Image 1 (tube, rainbow, N blue to C red):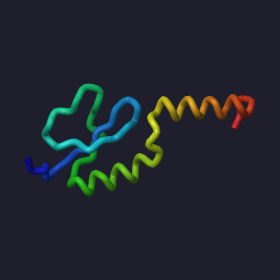
Image 2 (image 1 turned 135 degrees about the vertical axis):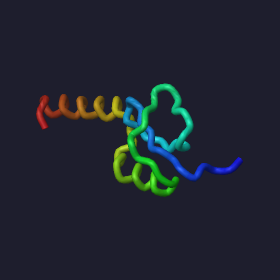
Image 3 (image 1 turned 45 degrees about the horizontal axis):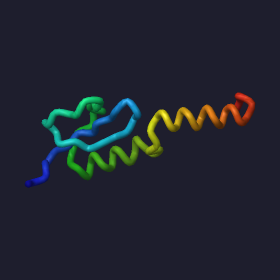
Image 4 (image 1 turned 60 degrees about the vertical axis):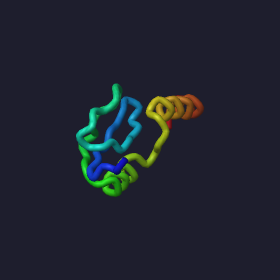
Length: 74
């Protein structure tokens, strides 16, 4: 099986990113982020735009825990 030449960056509701072969239907729950390129270009883009790889729900929960620990202010 050969590797695709072109990829796209996909994102889900938890703001998790993935590389997906361009022209291949995305699985349910994923949408195109808008960036297309080689595997290396897409990986570099993901590295640049997704510095915190924790799911959105975890980031929100931890931010709420932190705000509550500081009396609701930061």
